[in-house]
Length: 300
Image (cartoon, rainbow, N blue to C red):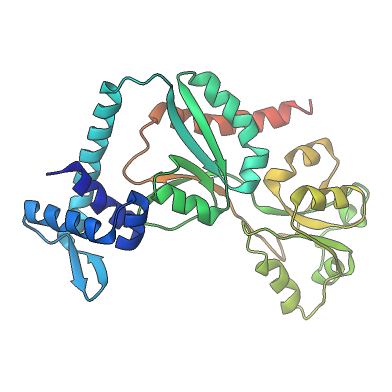
């Protein structure tokens, strides 16, 4: 049994395509197909069911996945142990744009301090790109929005739900149960980003048959925040980006849960065949607690 054949099998499983697996492995499609067929011959089973050009895992193929993962993992660990390198081992971390800007500058130095033997490479990219890089093993671990893929294991990580915020002294600060009509009457700034389902905000006004007073439509979060801070509008912003302003009292959160709630946590994700840096994983989870505590202490 050849390790290259097992890796070809797992790439096809994760990427759900021989074409994508071939691109990720820098091989031709016939080569990937030949490797899988040779593996099937060695095992004496059909790992995939073939119908025309379509390819689906067989029952035996699904059952074989954890064993293939374990063999590859053991091989990679043994290779790392035996290989002597002049440069430190590298851990590649990816994060979506908002997490990159507001959490990673805090977390990366902590991780380096805890693991000086590692070199940390960081990539900031949209969620769709991060998923693709995870599946192609170009990223070891990624911070991103919720994703459903059988090749990915994930854990809820940070709260980044949308919050309606206004400047201090705004009339909404002293009101209860803001109506959709009242919300529509206020000059509003919309920060549009692919990380959030903004259609739900638009749908709120559509259902009430009301046209909102959108004065500013921007694609940069700090620009949107600055407009609200300068008292030129109100808006919905991701909570990760406004923690400091809320705690200092520079911005005021308005409870609109009776008319709209958009909860979109950040998840930490890696491939199902395991994240080899278990100690780093624990430190990543611990960094969230320190991040929240740091924010709290910063205003006391």
